[in-house]
Length: 184
Image (tube, rainbow, N blue to C red; front, side):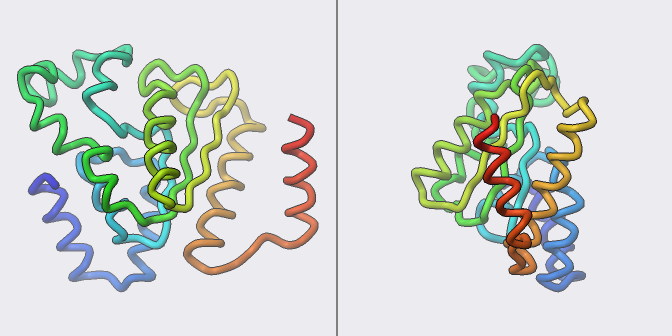
């Protein structure tokens, strides 16, 4: 894990209780800070939500619409700093994964292509980590349709209610979701 991420987590551990740290993770669920995913998947938090998350920076370089961003950040393409790209990729730490993870991704995302979420979903599934992946049709990098924004917010609330607070949705809500999935 990068030094900056270790320092951030050390400060959080010193200043916050477990429950407050979980709430802060809820608020930060879309932040793609370098190394934050590795901390989350190592079990530091009770739950995490990954919105258009970067899971494998090496494969991302080849499919993103902005490879120059990675080059500027790392000082070159992956083949010039393979270790740097690996150190910053959640896939490099997935063997330690245990944090329940909600993955949300836009189907038409060119910035962080859908394959990033799919890679992480597969790895977490194979590791037996509780995971759910939602792909939003027609959406680019960042959900834009009001109905789908609402769905994302509701899913995040339900995810954190379940894994942080231990709350299940009311029976009628479960039935609505079941019918909704059939209709899709």
